[in-house]
Image: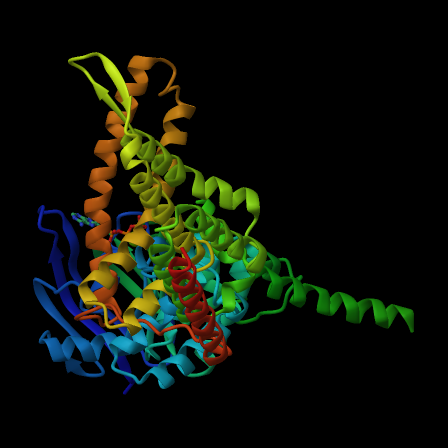
Length: 287
Length: 248
Ligand SMILES: Nc1ncnc2c1ncn2[C@@H]1O[C@H](COP(=O)(O)OP(=O)(O)OP(=O)(O)O)[C@@H](O)[C@H]1O
Ligand SMILES: [Mg+2]
């Protein structure tokens, strides 16, 4: 049996003004996996994330963490929030203190760690996101991307098992996105489970192990990202289209330019596959 | 945000706030003592004012611009104490007999202002809050200070953004429209304050907060040495002021 870290079982939630946040949503996150949550604006991604950390409580259905139903007592929530770290969509919403170091220390101190231990965690977290040089800079003088990294450090310093990021790539330039991706890869390699929301289906296809699709508050479907090509109709219903690399591979395979291969997940990989035989051919000519 | 600029750019940025606070306290006490001789008091104020400029490398122009509003307020206040207008007789009188007292008050205030500016222009507020925390200030006050300081920047940014957006669509083209734009900006801001406060609360819960806001205090190299220096300087200032006063 697969080891599930977080499970939502038929969870529904309505906001106080009556608008539906989640409708009968079921979703499972495997321990140690990379997960991308995809959905249009207003489809309920943020609402779902607020549930993972116990900030919202399902009006129907159940949330299970590591096989146990989440306990919404003070103690139970403390436990859940220590294990599930949530990075908010808007960094200005998350940052409390005007000093980077102070803000990152907020979580660990709340967990009841000693000052020494917390200081250690803070340094490690700032290092992990490449912000150690800016630890003493005032938050208001940081760029948007740097603020986002401080937010991530603030959650990493709590050493969560599951890292939940609400649209971490939004608003970052391509270089910053690549850097952030490298940070996420390192965290995943160290055993952390990651769940992030994104609008970028190409990125999700390239990076994630599992893709979860949301539409109008419902968790429409979840599948391993290698199987994305089989779900074109569902994607279309959610007004999303397949990444172009899938069509490219199909065309190239049909025309014989590529051999039959398992799904290629990014245009860089596709290019590498295309260049390989060409290089072989030209070196054969040379001889 | 001129103060912000000075605070993060000066040479004493890495000096422990305890030392700077002690020095400022010494200057404050000295200003109170010595002001009974207003000329000496003013001299002390000038001396203390040069400390951040010469010692910490705060730009003189910046310092002057920071000091000017409170200083002008002070001088106008002093003048108004000196001059009395009698409306019934329609005359203006100089209160010469209380002249000395007025000078004492002005000298004392200038000294106190210089002492405070010594601290304020060299120490980031986050350091000051950390210092207050070490001095066991009530948590509630500190939490309010932390949040206000942070939210100040968030809101000044959103006010600036909203104003720019309004101006870009001719919101300030004439007086009537300006008033209207200003009104809707205020209304919008109120809604934002409400939302943000809820947002911050959620963010605090997400990171497991259930009581006072706790942060790691910044550490300062050579804190002991700097504090000792400052203590000696502060004591010297106070001693000198006592001696100067008795030497009337
Ligand atoms: N505080 C709230 N009160 C009432 N309704 C809300 C509230 N927050 C969200 N909603 C509604 O719940 C639905 C889901 O919103 P949510 O913020 O979860 O979407 P999202 O997928 O995160 O969107 P986006 O991609 O724009 O961030 C939306 O229809 C929204 O209008
Ligand atoms: Mg959202």
